[in-house]
Every structure is written in structure tokens, then in C-alpha cells.
Length: 388
Image (cartoon, rainbow, N blue to C red; front, top):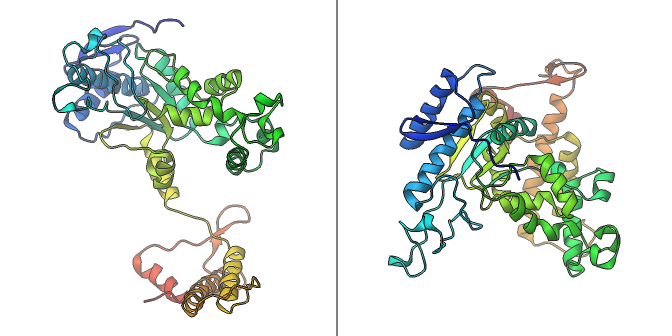
């Protein structure tokens, strides 16, 4: 493995910042503001012209702050690799001179763990932008334990699942469940080319932890999604679960906006931003991402199916021989009425021939209606029968 580029070291806002070349004035300005904001624990809204190298400046300043934090709180010097456990805690090593000044062994006073290293989250709008930022990281002298979070669509390497290309999330979960029911074995041990062919689940999932340890450690060359996929194929290990496991102990995590802004995704990926440095690159896109995270799509057909299902349960016509209680009947009847009212309203609002149809042309063969303001929304809810 080639050593990281040396570059130059500058003193910015009291911090030693490693940079691959003499920075532009705009980069110096960005790095100074980032370091001051991190020191004060405040937010910073920074703007820099396109092509001015702001991504490199953001990375180097955030990682310089993290390196100083490790030195001040753990006695770890720049370039010294330390072991981090799955929760992000530094694992003490009595034989490591980097820990001579501050020891945190089991017999130390109060038997306390060392402080948790503040993680850096670097979020962009798309994975292709993350790939560019990882390339920038490779130009620097910084080599923190890092990982790129992505979906199964990006990371899955199971040939049969990729070939079918339907719902990769669901197929992955089905394979994992099949592996649990079949004893969790891997198809490799039986000589089958792929674990799915044996009916015993996905054999790639078993090497994920080992892959995570190999590719996401301090001093290792930064990998983007494509690099991790290649590594996964070589070692027959799942890149998706490797990335998810590596994120538990990573010091630098790359991800799209929605991994941080969408509560459901943040919970599914076990992301905790408390005490972390969060960088939202190209932040003018955050508004759209936040709106999408708080939105959902509901179509008329599914609403009508749900209303019919509620009505069927309420009238004890499920046909499964199980009679619900009177209280359950009443609850399902109320829910069925609400859903039926919403379906009725949506059908009426979608009637382009009706003179009061609110839809307006929006692109080719598309129509849209937008209501803004509390009064306008309240009127539509009254039309649905949802007024208090």
C-alpha cells in the first residue's frame, strides 16, 4: 500500500492542517471558519464558488480538528494508528507510546472508558458526488477509518439477485431469513456456486465483518462504493453489511443527505449524530431532500382497497372463521369510513371533467394541485370529512 501524499502543514486558527498543496485564499477562509465553528460547537453556513476546492478544504479542516481532539483527549499523535471498537471508543494499548501520557486501562481511576472520538459525517446529494469527495480524500495525508454508506441497490453482489433486479431489499431479506431457517450455512461449504442455489441463504453475508476490518481501518486507502464492491467480490463478502458494520467504528462516514435527514433511514442504519461534525455539502439541495423525507405517495387504487378491507373486517366477512370483538368491529368501521372518505375526495379531485377540479397541467400528461396555508388545507380536510 502506497503511503499517503505528504503535502504541506499550515497553522490555521491554531490547528496544524495537512493540505496537499498551497491552498487558495478561498480554501483558507473555509478552513478557518470550519475550525472556529467546530471549536465553538456552532453551526456554520459557508459559501464558496464552484471549482474553488471547497470539498478538500472541508475535509482537511474537519479531520485536522478531529486529530487535535484525539491528541488533546487521548494523547494520540497524528499518523499513529489506534484501534477503535464497534461503538467508536478508542481501545487502550498499554504498549503504545501514544498512550503514555493518558492511560485508560481497566484499573485506572474510576474505571472509566476513554472519551468517544467525535465522528465526522460528510453528506452529499448523490453517491456520484461522494465518489468525487473520496478521490479528494485520497489526495490528502489523512487516513482515518472511513466508510461510504449505501443501499443494497449499490452494494449487493449476489449474482442471482442482481440478475433478477427486482426488489433487491426484499430479496436480500428473504435470503437472510432462509439462511436462519436453514441453519445459517453458506453455499460455499457445500460446493454450490452461490448460497441461494442450496436454499440456505446468502453465503456472502458471512464474510462481511472480516471485510469491514480489512478495508475500514486507520491508515488504509480510502475506498468508494465501487472499490468496496470489487473488494467484496474478491473475498466473497457482502459489501453492504461490511459498510454497515464498519460505520460503527469509523471516524469518517460518507453518505447521502437522506441518511442523516430521514429519521427512518437514520434509525435503520443506527446513525447517531450526537457530538459529531456534520458536513452537508451543496446544502442548497437539503430543502428538497427534507421535503421528500417527510412525504409519501398514496394512490387511489390502494386507498379503495384499504377501505374495502376495513369494511370487510368490520362486517365480519373476512372468511377466515375468526370473529373479531365488538370493539374491533367499531374500530375497523371508523378506520374504513375515514379511508373511504379520503378515497372519495381523491377520486373527485382527480376528475378532470369536473368544473371544480383543482388539478392544473404540470408537464407532459401530468396534472398537479398544490394547497398552501392552514385555511386551504383545512378546507380540503373538511371535504374529506376529516374536520374535528
